Each structure stands twice: as C-alpha cells, then as structure tokens.
Length: 279
Image 1 (cartoon, rainbow, N blue to C red):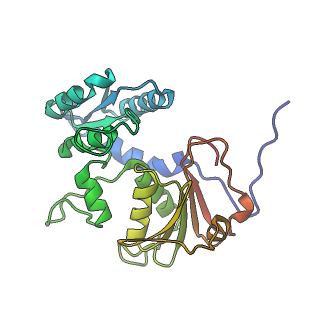
Image 2 (cartoon, rainbow, N blue to C red; image 1 turned 180 degrees about the horizontal axis):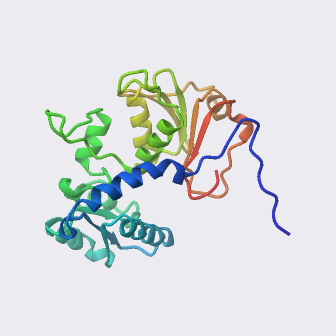
C-alpha cells in the first residue's frame, strides 16, 4: 500500500530546484556551446575519502558537467598523497577548476596551523578555486568585497551552496529588487540552522551583507549576524521565538534525527532545506 502523500499547508507550495536552475543551466549550455572543444572548462575533483556522500556528489558533478558540455575528471588518491595531487592540479594548465571532496582529515591538526582540511582549502590556487573557500575569497566575503579588482570586472567566487540559496530566495521574491544591490534583504529576518564553514556561516554573512538580520543557530549557540558584526542573542531568546518571527528559514542539519516543528513557520515565510535529510 502506497504511503500517503504529504499535504501542503493552505497557500503553500513546494518549489523544486529544477524549476529555479533551468535558466542558469540554459545560460551555461549556450555559453559552453560557443567555445571550441579544446577550450571548454575542465574541473578536477580530488577524492581522498571513503564517504559515500562524497562519492555520490562526485558522480552528480560529473553527470552535470557532461550534460552541459564541459569536462570533469575525478582523481582518486590516498589521503597522504592528496597534497601532492592538489599541487599537480594547481600547476596543470589543462585544469580550469579544482574541488576537494571534504571531509578528508576532519579536525586533524595541520603543520601550518588550524585543521588539515582548512590548510587544503587555502592551498587551492586562487585562479582555480571554484568553491570560494580559500583564504582570499573567505576574506572578501566577510569584508563584503564583491569584486576581485578595483575596475569591478571580475566578481569574487562565492561558496556554491550558499550562493544557490541566494538564487532560490531571489527566484521566490524574498529579495526586493526595488532596493539597490546590497540592500535587497533590508528589514528581513532570517534563521539559519547550521553554522558550518562551507554552508551556514558563509550564507549568514552573504544575507547579512544584503541587509538581513540573520539568526545563526547551531548545536550549542545562537548568534545574530548583521553586516560586518556578530553578536550573541539575548539569554532568554529561544529558537522557537526566533523562527516564528523569521521571513526566511534555512535548514541544513546533517542528521535524520533533527526535525523542526512546522507550526513554528509563520504564514508567508520561505523555507529552504539544504540538508541531505528532511529537516
């Protein structure tokens, strides 16, 4: 017997990623088709762990690149050989972009300071960092610097998942195009349940840089992100109170055991789930 389908709340509708991605996919395919075969972008993915999710991500990446007329290569290496493989990809003139499938070393400390994974992120060539995770791009993001150059001819690279959330919010009208760029989330309250370095924290900064008041909720703390500032929430504030006043709620908890009570979502709010589980 088939399981009953979940019903949407009155006035609500489910929006698929395909609907939002369609015009971007078309733009990429058209731009790629105009390039000679030997000039099309090539992305190298470095895989040095046994994480099934990372392997699946690599499969999806390859499928998408081939669909859009670009080249993708997975280079599977042992963890101890990853630094050398990264340096070879940095120097390989045939490689346009590099991504590493994390986590690799987790919190293992690095000789250079910080964690080994952080050191790897900072070792990707600035010219080939397609994820915007190296130190230069992290610095420009948190300083709200949107261009690499003073002529504003080249935009800074932003982390892909946070940028996808921004594109979703633009598509759904959460961004007010009547305001200037950088002010289009002014007056909006956002809750993000996740403060990872690759999703939650950069997304909080991006939305705060666009004018929103962002409540960043993690397992042991909640902070308020405003443009250029981070501060703790009042000691009496609860997650439920914060969510109930939010115009946008983004869920990214990598656990099937975490579930937010749908009753907390106020009418008209936008909810985005970026976790692999249904939060």
